[in-house]
Amino acid sequence: MALAASISKARAFRLDESDRVRIYGKIAMPMRPDTCWDWVGTVNADDKPIVWYRDNQTLAHRLIYFDFLGVWIDGIRLHRTCEHAECVNPRHRQQGQ
Image 1 (cartoon, one colour):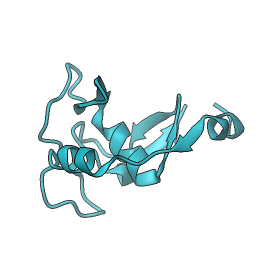
Image 2: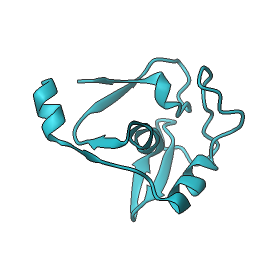
Image 3: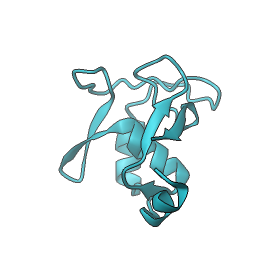
């Protein structure tokens, strides 16, 4: 996906406080920037962290990444830079195609 196409699909995004408390509450402490953030909530059949958000089951790492970034980008793929399937640390993600 071209950068220009990605940017055209971007929109401001922030979890509201109640969703942030609920979702971030499913991360094992401590949450240091340099370590994996272990998801202790529900995972799907592929061991990917999932959470209900606005009546949809959503991949938790995407919600956390876009909340951290402050913008939602439709259609973008996020790849882990660590080997831990349950990691939701946004610093352990990179955008890809």
